[in-house]
Image (cartoon, rainbow, N blue to C red):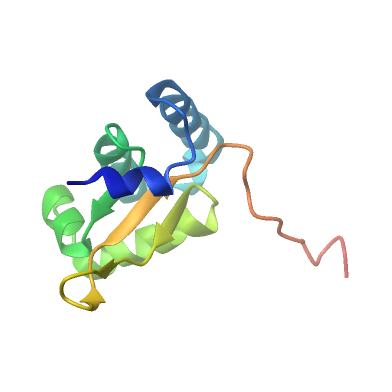
Length: 120
């Protein structure tokens, strides 16, 4: 049962999730390439039911037709843009790392970044 995913969501309902995803896309459209858009779409699609997605890199790579390293690079970029959170998951029965859990962040929940060009 995947009810544990609700612990990782930032939203109360699907409407809030959809709105945040739409705003992230619109705000970061030029910073993202097609692979980034495809991965965000996949995370959103798998997050609809419980608010977060439990996905392995290989699963994402197979679904969008890219390599594992490309997927990792794109996920790193989505995290740096403040669009998604990645949570490491330990499989309870296996005592080992499982697939990561991804959650889309609220649009106004960007990490605070100081631009050293303006604030030395």
